[in-house]
Length: 334
Length: 73
Image (cartoon, each protein chain N blue to C red):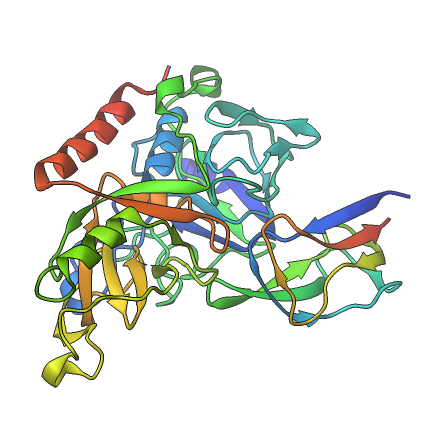
């Protein structure tokens, strides 16, 4: 019971909930896609994993995803923290704290994040010991649209008290750990994301020329992009079929089939990248699929500000990308 | 007197302006509401004070980082 009391004392209190701040872990709630429950988890899983490694946690430990910023939290005990992802100019009290580096927050200190500004859209706050929320169906990730997981199944709001797990290491062992230069991503306004073609592409659903055009164009991120789907600007398609046959009037319609996270779903004329809180099945074609090793970059695209360019990759190249990311995580902290 | 600028955290559509210039507001009070990411986002006052200026109107589209209002405290 004594250890229980000790861990009760490790906590932080939300002062400002921000636009959309949630608890997320990685890889999220796997194994229930067949009954429509999405994995959830961090939209930029790379930055979340680096943040955890900086504070000595397992890479997939539960941490905070701060979307668009305006978030502040008060340490109710001494805690080791790290902030990665979009630079929202984090401060501890009056003092600026570095990104991609672990630091000590003393009891009573307030960590504040502003807004993303010119690049990136999501920041990640990891704490040594992890955010201690109940595991639901094998994950601590929040699925806010479904109202379960994370902290009470919802986005954070003022006065929420987040319990923090115990850490085996002392603060002095953990403070000042840095991400190596090569592992810190540079976010940009135009983001290149790698994707494999299909399952519903050319020549059966769109023309070969149109598929090439799609991969050469720059696609603006719609202001309604969110954790369910990243909506892009509608475009004029050169369809291979006049309609969807028995599946519907529009040539983007097909008989309902399964989707995968990262699918570029064409809903009418609008491409939508299905994200970690998205649907598991439906009746629109999926032209291509953003690969696992690249999906994190989409999570840093700001709605209404940034644009995406797709780069066609093979199955083997997709595996290499994922392995490269994992290598970075294994060697990225000093 | 310190003036605090309230910046748009995301691109969006102004669907409601909740306060008028000159009004007294407390920290955490909603100043205006943006529609973005398929939801409504309340933009609140970081600090309490007086609304010195509101830069947007209902129906305006705003960009990330755009100044929405100024609070004098």
